[in-house]
Amino acid sequence: MKETADSEETHGRRGTRMADIAAMAGVSSMTVSRVLRDRSCVMPATLSRIEAAIDATGYVPNRVAGSLASRRTDIVGLIVPSLRNSLFAETIKGVSDILGPMHPLMIADSGYSLKGEEIAIRAFLGQRVCGIILHNTKHSPRGRAMLLEAGIPCIETGNLAQQPIDMAVGFSNRDAASAMTMYLLGRGYRHIGFVCLPTKDNDRAAERKAGYLNALSHASLLADPRIVIESPPGLKSGGQALSYLVEVVPEIDAVFFSGDVLATGALLEANRRGWIVPDRIAIAGSDDSELQESVSPPLTTLRFPRYEIGRRAADMLLNRLSGRSSGRAIVDLGFEIIRRASA
Image (cartoon, rainbow, N blue to C red; front, side, top):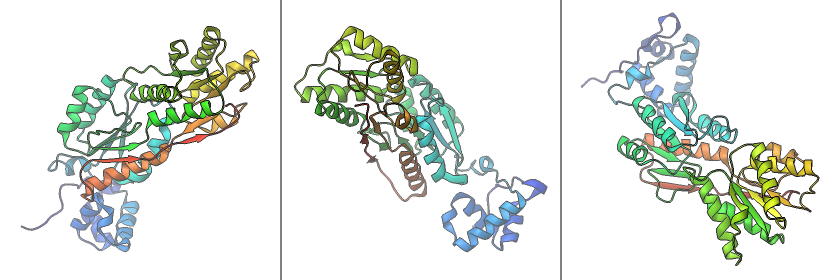
C-alpha cells in the first residue's frame, strides 16, 4: 500500500500546506509528517531545513485532526496541587524544557484534593493526551482506575511511590523528614516540635510526619502529641503555629516545619517577639528557595531536585512514547540537608 501523509494539512499564515513545507525543504510530505511526530527520525541537516521552512511560513500542523486514527494528540497533561505555590514552578519548567514544542503541555490545578485530581484526569483523557504527569502518588479509586484503563504513559512525582501506576520519579519524603529530625537531634535538641500541612489527601505531608516520628523512635524518644500539629498553609499560619507550640510546651527547643513558607512565617514571628533563633528556639524547614537563604537568620532546610524531577519525568515519558523503554520504573533523585544558622 502506498504510504501517504495523514490529514495534518491545517494551514499556517498565507494558507501554507505540508506539501509547501516539503517542497521548500526538498523532502517528501511523508518526511515532514514524520518529523512533526519525532524530530530524531531524520538527519540534523534535514531537520534544520524543515524547521527553517516551518519558521519561514508560519505553518501550524493540525495535531488533533492528525490524531484521529491513533486517538491520541501530542499533548501531555500535568497536574500539580496548586498553581499559586511557586515550588511547583521548577518542576513545570523542567518538564517543559524536555518536551519542547513537539509536545504541548496542558496544566491543571488539583487544589490539594484527590477529587480535584480525578476531575483533571478525566478532562485530560477526554482531550486524548498522550501521557500524564502527576505531582501525587495517592489517588482516588476512580482516578487510579482511569489512569490504569487509559493505557498511556503515567509518571508520578512528589513522593517516591513503591508501587507506581506506571513510572515514578522523585524522592522519599519519609527519609528526608527522618534525616532532618536526626540532624536536629544530633545538634542536641530534644524537645522537637513538628508542623505540617493537613495530611488528609496529602501523601507528602503524611510521609514527612511519619519520617519525623520514625526518627524520634530510633532515638528512643517519645513523641509529644502536643507539639505535633497540622496547620493551614501560609506565612501567617507558620507564625501562629510557633506561638502556639511555645505557649503549650515552653521547654520546646526546636521546631521542624514540613514546608518553608510555614518555617519562614515562624522565623518572622520569632524575630517579632524577640526570641533569638536558634538560641531560644531552632527552626528548620523543608523545600528551600532563594528566600530561605536571605532571611535572618538563614533557614536550615531540606532541598529537593524539583527541576531535575521535571526533566527526568518528561524524559521517561518520551522514552515510553518512542518505544525506547517499557515496564514499570522508579527513579530516586534524593535530597540534601542545607545547613544554615537557624538550627
